[in-house]
Length: 222
Image 1 (spheres, rainbow, N blue to C red):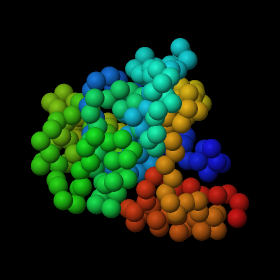
Image 2: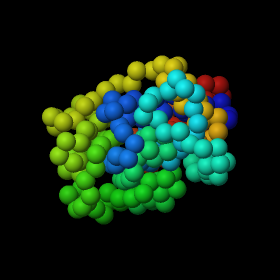
Image 3: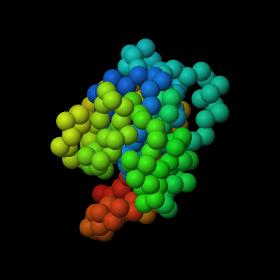
Image 4: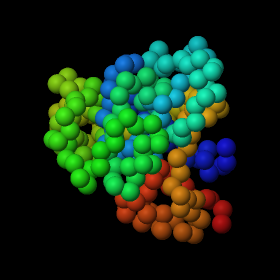
């Protein structure tokens, strides 16, 4: 793993991880991720698609995986965590037209193009809505009656939505160390990254454009 790949992991991965832990996500539940192509969303998908045999001191909700499945897994990195670490039964996510195939390759079961389909046109209901873009005032309609909603972008006016700022901890990353070492969880870095430090403003412009895929990385040394 390169320095840039390692640098892209901690913030996004721990944010995705804490979101699932806060709602006490259980194996077999379904999740709807708003914004599957972003830094947090792409890792949240991987939580669904990756599982390995971990040390005993891990969350009771993490799903162990036999070694033969570890060898056969080929996917990239809220999407990665959901299916393979936390054992989600179904994962759906939203993205724009140009990123549909990219997000599907991360492991999402259903990819909704938000430029063509609105939330109220989605027939399924989900056990957990993980909103990474601040749209929970609309995305709540895909939640089941007692489903939990996390919005990591903005405090939401919706009474069922919870907002949090991630609590960074080395022990949280240690819980997923085995997944990373076996390449079950893989960093997703925007193709334009890394930016040089002298071009940091260009990096921010790219983030604000909404065209980024995965994490934006800035190299501290030109």
